[in-house]
Structure formats: structure tokens, C-alpha cells
Length: 480
Ligand code: GDP
Image (tube, rainbow, N blue to C red; front, side, top):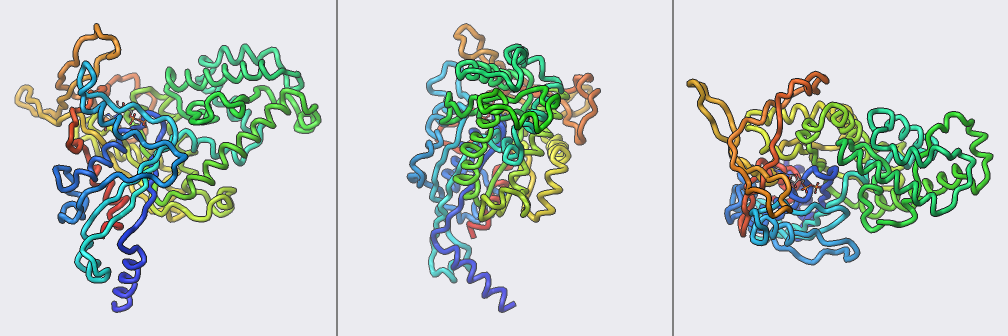
């Protein structure tokens, strides 16, 4: 017992009065990263001033004193656009009222200093009544993590994987790219301009599969979200189909200037100069990580995109579950000590569906969760709404009570001034299956999740669902 108290005191002193934490937020685009970060920052800034944080003990006990934005340490990374997000949510400059923040498309960062009163025991040990936690928040696209397997692939294996995916319901979006490569074989000689043109067709295919098809397991991730590499030659390559017709020896014997060797060199360059540095410069420096997942959006998109999300998440989570033998173990000298996984936009469904939504998330992630647990990575799953845009209601019909949601629907094309104003609705969006659905589920048409407009947020903390529980898991132990 005495030893435990001694260790606790030692831990507290270690962390000291000015503690630091690097928390990274990721998710595939549209998962809700930007909304999540705006909400998280605003909840902390308004702690004790109207933010509802009952599930965060430091706030519940009145010890959380608020947060201030301070200048970030790494000046080469863009600032997270908090002000722009708040402007959109204030609805002051937009004809139809508050709008969702414009999503970030690359890595960005923001530093907060959180003030709090330590618990009475900690205050005694530290001999102080006030402490600060310096929180670095880093937002980056989950698409970048999908490139991880490329570190262990060569150009031929990657090409074969792309070909399999192409044949799983995506060829439709790839017609122009396939037509452009059709006349070529691995031994063709192709000039720079032509390669760049074909690479553009390949990138267009990835974008179309994403936007129109709802697919997410698409590589290379930077082709979709290039960040500072937009239009850079390092992004000018593409996979080759039909390589299985060639033996590895025949491919290796091709001249340097052949299509195959040129693309293989660029693939290698991309791995070494784009994928590896991301892990080396950023990823290995995160202490904690939250991964956001738009489970409801994937359900809405249909069976093939839903299966595809499951495959993409499997890959994405490998970044956190890397083992000793893994190449990454050499790239990183420490690992994330806490992981949160959250199904976002829970305000799209009525509250009694939240349990099913979480079960579905856990089913979707069954394999990666097993691997993470096996590697003893502490993790928790949540269902959240960063910015709650609907209110739970009940409607009574023939004497029976039914759950419903009240909110405002976003109009179809709000950029068009002729578009009619937002419509207030009261609806039941449908039931969330608590298990991975069979393909017949999509034929039954028993759900349609609405696209709600955000509430007006002006100098207040956004309403939310369980952001306080997430904050407790990610920060609570540092606010003692
Ligand atoms: P990002 O691409 O991961 O940064 O995603 P965003 O944060 O831009 O979110 C994408 C879209 O999802 C937003 O424009 C909203 O329409 C919706 N969204 C995000 N968070 C919430 C939420 O908490 N509730 C609701 N109803 N919609 C949300």
C-alpha cells in the first residue's frame, strides 16, 4: 500500500505541473474529423461556462478551468482552421444559416493550454493549486494510413491487389484509365507526358470510385488527398494490370526505360519519400489517437462500399497494431498508449439505436480489434455526435409511442441562391442493424439517414453526444 502511494506520488511529479500530450485525430474523409476537432476545442474552452461535460470527472468536479489556444510548436504544419469553422457554424455570413465547417484535406495542428486544479491529493504532492496540460491536436487524413501495406509490397504485388479491387465492382469508374493503358505492355517505352496523362486518368478513377461509388479502400492515399504534394511528379504512377502473364525473371530483365521498370521505380520512390516520412516525422510522435468512422454513411452507401469500408479499416488499424516483426517497429521508437474508436454522427439516429450502432462498429472492426487487444493497446469504442444537430422526440400514433428526431434538413444545393430554405422535419430514420447485415438488408430499404444542418453555434459550446466520455478516455488521466 505504502509503495503504491509512493509510486503514485512519483508519477504525479513526473508529469509535473506542466504536462504535455499529443493527440491525433484521423478518419477517412467525411468521417467527421473537422467537426470533431472544432467541437473538442470548444468544449474545453467553454468548460465551466456552459459546456456539458458530466462524463469528464475534472469538469464535473469543477476542476477544469478552461483552455486557451497558444502558438503551435511546428511552424511548417498548417494551423487547424478553427476560426473558419466557427464562422461557418455561426451562420453570420451564409444565406441559409449555420453551415458545417469546410473539411480539412491535409495534416494540420493546433496547441491548447488547458488549465485545471489538480485533485486534492495531487495538489499536496505537487504543492500547487493550479496545473496546465499542453495539448497538441493533430488532424490528418485516414487515407494516408491506407498506404501502410505498400511499405511491405513491391510494385507487382501492389498492382495485383489493385487489379483484384478493380474487378470487385469498380471497373465501371476506371474506363478512361483502362482505355489509356490498354495499348501498352510492361516492355513498352513511354514518355513522361504520356505517363503523367495516364496517371491523371488513374487519379480520376480513384476520385470517381470514392465520390460516386462510395468506395474507400483506394491507394495510393495521397492521390486522393495529396496535401502539399498536389501535382508533384512523385504522384505520377499507376498499377499495371495483367502482370501475372509475365514471370518475375522476365519483368526483372526488362530495360530501365520500360514502362514496368519506370513505374516500379516511381512506386519505390513514393514508398520511401512519401509513406515512410509520414510515419517517421508525424505518426511515431503521437501519444494518443482517435479514429473516427462514419458507419451510418457506409450503411447508406450500399453493400459493396460497406464491405470495402471493412477492408479499409482492417488496413488502417494495422498502423496501430504493428508488431515487433513489422518494418514499422524499426521506424518508430514508441507507440500510441491509448486509442479511441468512434462511430460519428450518432445524432442521425434515435437514441435507442446507439447501442446497435456501437455493436455494429465493433463487428465491423472485429479482426483489427482482436489484433489490437492481443498487442495490449488500450482502446475503447464510442458512438458520438461531435455537433448534435437533431433533438430526440417521441410521437404518439394510435396510442403508441415512437422515437423520432427533429431537425432541419440541409437543402440540396445551397450554393444555388434559388434553392428553397431548409425544411424542419420530424422523422424516424430507421433501425441500425447490430450485426453485419446480409446483402438483402439493402433491398428492404428500411433506413435512410438524413443530412441535418448544424445548429447555430455562436460563442457557446456545441451540443454533442458523448464527447465528454471521449475526452475522459483521452485526457482524463492527465487532468488529475
Ligand atoms: P472530415 O472530412 O473527416 O473532416 O469530415 P467533416 O468533419 O467535414 O464532416 C463531414 C460531414 O459530416 C459534415 O459536413 C457534416 O455534414 C457531417 N457531420 C460531421 N459531424 C457531424 C455530427 O456530429 N452530426 C451530424 N449530424 N453530422 C455531422
